[in-house]
Length: 79
Image (cartoon, rainbow, N blue to C red; front, side):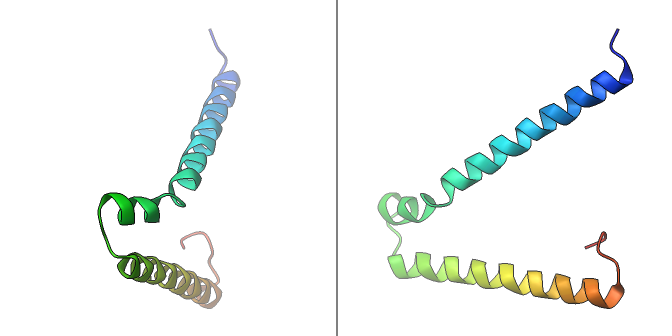
């Protein structure tokens, strides 16, 4: 029978592989997504650019707000 420590090590290793392959898959999809939208779904290039620009803006805005809240509340973990 496996000891709890050995089982924990296997779980951590399995989660590491899952995280790696999830990151790898998302890194492979992100550059291809605009091509898919334009060539397959026949969306306009300007519309795709606008959507990607808004997504980037929201991402940076949430980082800024999260950082400001973290500094003000002096608590990093909840955010």
